[in-house]
Length: 92
Image 1 (cartoon, rainbow, N blue to C red):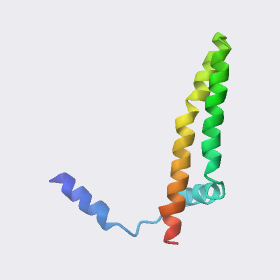
Image 2 (cartoon, rainbow, N blue to C red):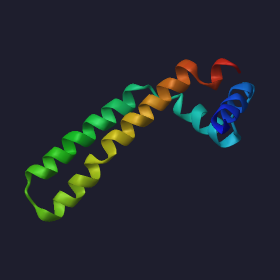
Image 3 (tube, helix red, strand yellow):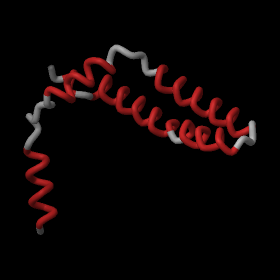
Image 4 (cartoon, helix red, strand yellow):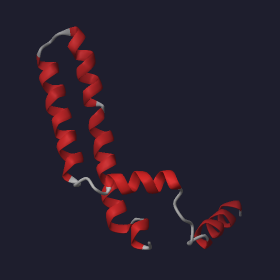
């Protein structure tokens, strides 16, 4: 029963506005082309692979760090695209 109450509360608040921080982030990231995030992820993959190929133990740690940025950059790109297509800027 609680889940039904929560769902009805969430679905009835369709006029919720974004906060100032989210609005500022979205206004700045909307200026970037969506390809920037994809190319950043690809560059991170290539750099990680190159560092991994050196077989240096010290560089392997850096390689893992760079490789973990790939999904983060792709999610940023997805968020950026969603905001452009169906975000709050459609209503404003």
